[in-house]
Length: 585
Image (tube, rainbow, N blue to C red; front, side, top):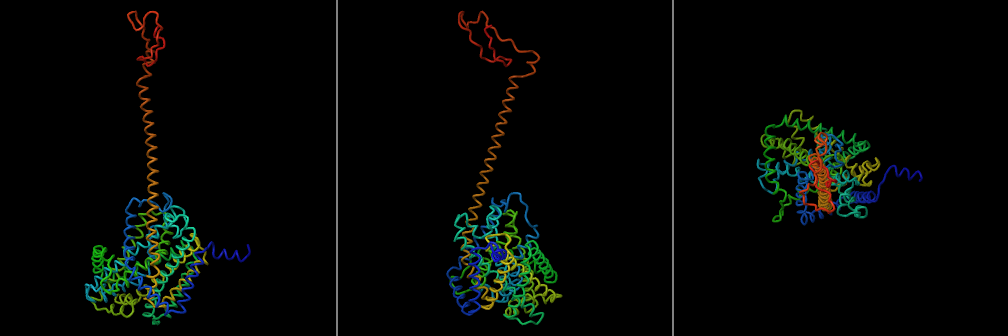
């Protein structure tokens, strides 16, 4: 082996076909989009129209089915199955585990949409249900914000994460998306089928994370333009993405337990501090009243909101909002799910569902109640101009809201810092997962591979911004997510099949153990009965004191034996417990 081969192996590690094919596809798309941004935008919009009009209902049914399936697993007999060997403790503390899940899952999106989405619905109520800029429109907007960031969004991550964690830590398989299909495809996942599945997961992840990077750049640009006077535009956003790229590349060079974990904990500290700031200096009572009422409306209308379509009108609200969110979550699912799986070793399925579905959903809703509720209160009762600010520039709503409170400028700077750390954490986590996907499932891909995927993420985010800004990000997310959604439906069936097989094997094993114990107890009981019977029939104390009883004699009046007959031995036991062999004496 020459020096070049040694260097090549050291840099790339054990990469395979998925790596080269994925790099070729992503690099090709980035090149075409950079050279022909207008053409890419036009084609993407055409594909989006077809997907939304012909197959949009599939997004709604699939994500709703994922919610039901994940909650069923957590509450069912499968909930006690551990993601790893039995009795193995979790790798991370519960607090750090939740912090990493929340930071990797929804960080940037919550900050970007926390004020923007309720206010956009306030300006243009969903499905034309209410008059714009009224209290009714505000309440409807909050309900749909809860819906879009609730159970459906996290169910996408939970399904992929649970499937990978189960096969990786329970069955010691490779941590690849394709491995989750082994119960259905068998050894075919080691060939072309596996390559196709893993490549699709990589491409979907790149588009999903690029969308997040783009949203983060928009939010940061809006903040620095407001507080520092820097121009708001695509060129500034590209510079922001490049700067963030340098930072998360540095983070990618550190081990998982150091870089991502520390950044995630820092995320939670800043996020909790900003949340408490809004609670204390905002309309506190209104926030909690809004949270309580909206939670009730969300739970009471979740079925109708989950399945609403517009077949009798030309309304495109569902495609622009609900379908975008579900597609964004689906495109993020390979990345977030794989990352959650990586940090969930030792958790039971019930703990996993609680940590991935229930806790983050509750935190997301509290966030929207605090930030969105404060914005609505300020707009309705103090005419703060937040609705107009959002109409002009979507990310500006957050900073306009914070400026209405004491020390609002400092709070705005903290929000910018929060977005930066969230973006770095998400991109760093994504480079780790992409490296794992393209290195045959190894848990620690090489630094060079992680840095390479980081650069490709940056390039993708930049070309998507050039090809339509926020609308371009939405469009590509919906298109890229569709094929992976179909894979996730099959993944759910494969996971249920695997869990059912293990459960029945465990039941059979426990039945055999119970039967063996019962047999042992039965034999022991029989031995005890035999010993008790023997002691009753052969009492030792009377024999020792009185001696053996004299056998009975045959008297002259006994006609059982006639003179001349051969004597027969007495085979009946005597009261003393011995058999008499000399009864004719």
